Length: 113
Image (cartoon, rainbow, N blue to C red; front, top):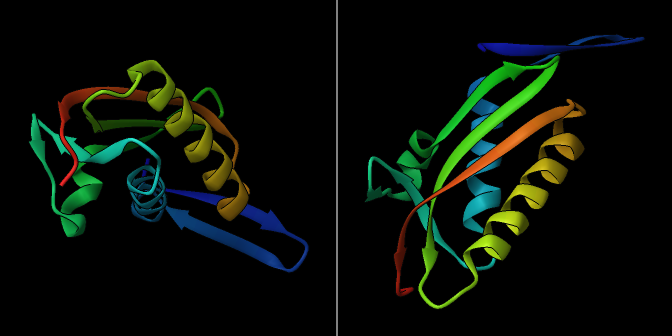
């Protein structure tokens, strides 16, 4: 998916996949229990965090996959559920695009810095 277009009475708005990925990355990084995003088992720096996020067309909406590193000692299922809910809410609120799915993969568990 390169971009999604929204038609309005005043014209079209195009939102790139990179912009959606940035929203997802920032939202996930701000979520309780998330130490950071991950790509192939490595914790990513904030500037490269979009590498831990994939955005694609799915079932007529936006499909999102992200890999996170979670703080040790927390309930992993609850953290993943919270991330999924927050990402869905923020992407829909900020872009007005329908989120079809958010798949969260927990790549690692670490003590927060």
